[in-house]
Length: 213
Image 1 (tube, helix red, strand yellow):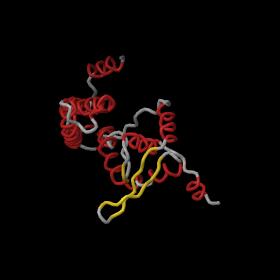
Image 2 (image 1 turned 60 degrees about the horizontal axis):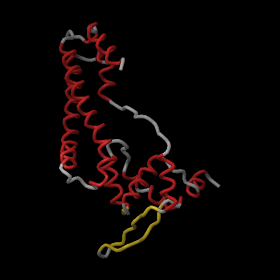
Image 3 (image 1 turned 135 degrees about the vertical axis):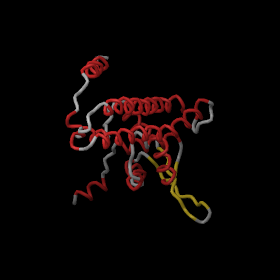
Image 4 (image 1 turned 60 degrees about the vertical axis):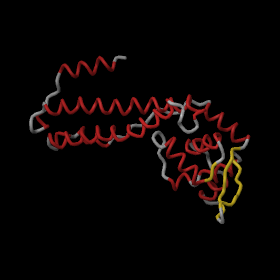
């Protein structure tokens, strides 16, 4: 039997599988609804392509973690997935493991790491773009935070769980904005050729103090 056949007959659950299973533990969803909810609620912390997410509900059924029922919406059929008791047991087992820490992917920071091969203006534009990203991301974040603070957020009964991630991303966006302001000040003090820039000893010492937490 080919490796593909082995995968199809015995799929292995991944963190994405369990993320989708967690959503099914909230309520039943169609595949389309699952992809929309995954993007809305988990997209910032676990971004995955929609094409990949469409595979997961079928995998859950194969594993016995979910059941599937076909219903009609007008003249169009759709499949709705629900979590099974076996699925709840598997989800609880996955939650018992602490998991891995975050993986940072920050292209603008990579560019700044080689700023001596560009211009000071290049570096300033890169930092400005990073701050703009934080501002854009926080627009929707602020709307959601205010909704939950006034008791109007979706699935308000799960606000205690949702606010943990909300607090993290609020701090992340604020951190990127503060860092961008600081980085811009540092770069402004560089000579025209970034290759001639010299680190401020006071700033290096301040970073060391902050790192000693």
